[in-house]
Image 1 (tube, rainbow, N blue to C red):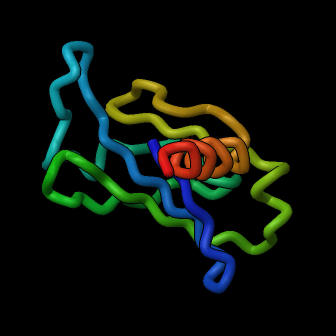
Image 2 (image 1 turned 45 degrees about the vertical axis):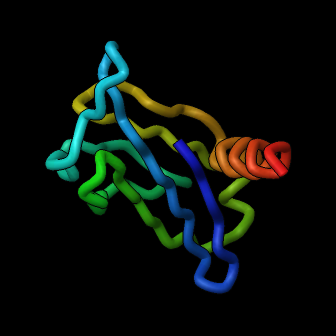
Length: 100
């Protein structure tokens, strides 16, 4: 799971590659199996990238919601993420920064 925030559009973007217990991809073909909330907003739909990955984008009203609201994502009723949204974005940034 990778999180990004785009300040110009106030959009949180989450990229997900769900896998089963044997690390097999759980897609493509299941964009309607995601549920939960990102930054306090219900997940309405996921975009199927047709390579086993999915993207969920949510517009937020206040940047402060990144720090105060949680992101909880479920796929086929299995919890993939349950943390503050800012922690998900910082973890992604730190991981990318450390690779350089």
